[in-house]
Length: 390
Image 1 (spheres, rainbow, N blue to C red):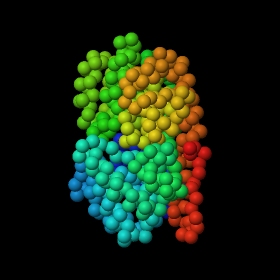
Image 2: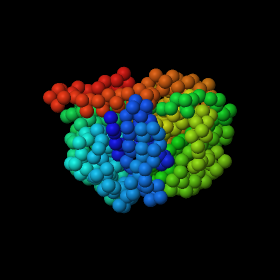
Image 3: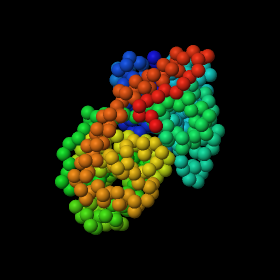
Image 4: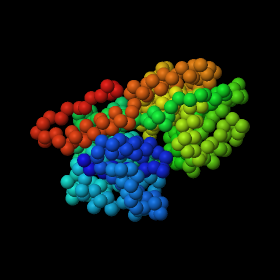
């Protein structure tokens, strides 16, 4: 099969959408399929073609104009002609519209991967809601199949009404984790809390302010505890000011230049990784899998999709989104006992080994592609099932 992935961001940009596509195409290439990723070149100097792996090509298209992670790339209209499958990773403002026009002149079949809702306030929120109301139903109807990391998330998303009427059109394809890169190691002797995520406006929903406030509540009685925030972006100065306001400069550090090897070590050494996201803009949380694979406990917001990545009380804890007191209490439960932290983390490693691997996920994705390409039009299509589907 020749497959095109259309996605708004791709490595080296740090983001869940692009990283998930990267791992999926790696595995699909191993299965013998040709993969081309079309993504905007937000920096004009990066535009062009790149063969990143055998059977994997990245095409970075210069944008007519762009705002944040939205980019108008009309070139897509004639770039997608010679493919079997076009897999659009939603949301992609500016790319999705050009893609639909291009489908008029292509033999390819469209699949949609629904990553997350887009949520905002003010004018931005109005644009998001308008887009979801008008454009999303169109692309959902045109798509032959809709993949997602979590059916639970879809049931609570902007696609919920469509799902109720067309549930058989949805296939759950969970993300995986590289359990060789992320593997258990020795913990630091002092309680260490880790956050990994973007610190830019596009990732405002990560709840970093609330995490700093929650840590400030327990810091006076846990002077040895440390909070490490890994990420970079235009909100870093805001977070630094909040750290200074609480007088936490000696206990909280922001690391914005971390290699994969160093990140793996940070996961190993931490007692717990926290994903304190505020709303449905967080749909899964790959960092949770990376942490669990590293034998490190997790604390995450009780949000659709996120809450199904692990089991509350077994590999970590769920907290009420935006509730600083709840987050502080759960952090204290972990950092007061290294034995407990290790027990939760080891259970997490076992959980990941059983349920999450890119190989299994990609085999499931391949089955979805085959269903789209080879199911006769007059044959009734039933839902694909998996042992990790709710």
